Figure (cartoon, rainbow, N blue to C red):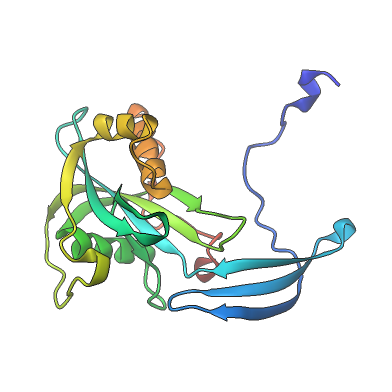
Length: 219
């Protein structure tokens, strides 16, 4: 078969098409998430059984400040015990409040984790963080025109106590990711997407309220 026949002829896009679930049960009740076991019918492939983390979904924020072409991005450093690493991340958090608008959740996380808010918001990129083992859907927002803000009544606990925060030139952050000095997949995706969006003069940005059908709560 020639290479010509191997090329896709339709627009490149994932196909949202949940397959029939014939059985679903909780295999483990966790502190934050449950592990579920489901039997899934895959047509000619028959029935398969899969264990996965049932996730609420999450949001993250690439917050920028600075002059055009010399933007800085806000990063926080948080201890992540499963990998034993104090990793640098963009602010992020769970969509664990029923009915909360994702952009509002992102603004809340930015206030709670870094004492900032922003005037200008756009959708930057949507992610399945680990589609083979977790149902997590995550939306990264781009926040610009950033200003100081306080999360009223919020007290940082656990790993969030005393987190270092800092503004880093966007180009330096991208270089750190490509050099293997950063490892958080959400942060790397946010940095690369922001850099590319800037190269395209922000023309690829979507509305902060763009449809999100991949997340069951926002279909």
